[in-house]
Image 1: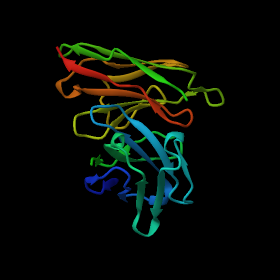
Image 2: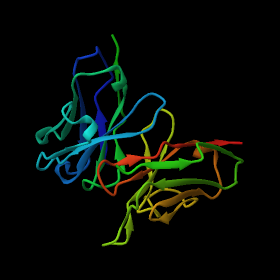
Image 3: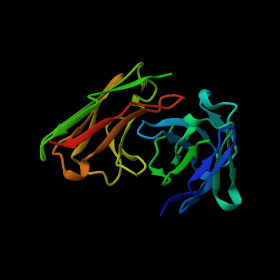
Length: 119
Length: 113
């Protein structure tokens, strides 16, 4: 069965970076896009961008360009999200979610990774 | 960017009664070349990731109970729960995937009256 398993919670100081992983299993990792969506505490959902694991191509929401990097390691079927220059308003649960293409819907999600930014 | 709005912000419905959530997009999400509305609905329960319920505005995801239905076209959409069950208590989000950035509505919280 399809599974997306994310890395554990992180606590970071403002200005630091964080790298969240999303390990895929149960399907062909390179056959589906991986998107990242975040959710601040008690707030709604915010799309951050996607990576095509086959080509490595990425597309970031304009809000995150220059501060977000999405990468992948096909040898271990894992996608990564790195957010730099963290601010307190980056405190959120970060989800990876699989879609059939760049504009697809997300039938499978990771369990979420809480990133807390606090001095 | 396409802005998604939802109404109401929250609603409380008696068990077995109908619940309807509305979603409006700031521009049409109907793609004329294939006549498909790029609109999805998700259900999110506390502490869980969102769950896909509906895509193409009205197609139920596999395994989703048939009490959930989606309708609408262009800029106006709705999600209906025909007979509310206790397990349907959640926040519901609409989402457009017509074009990047992919955007969500603010969510509608559904409770039992």
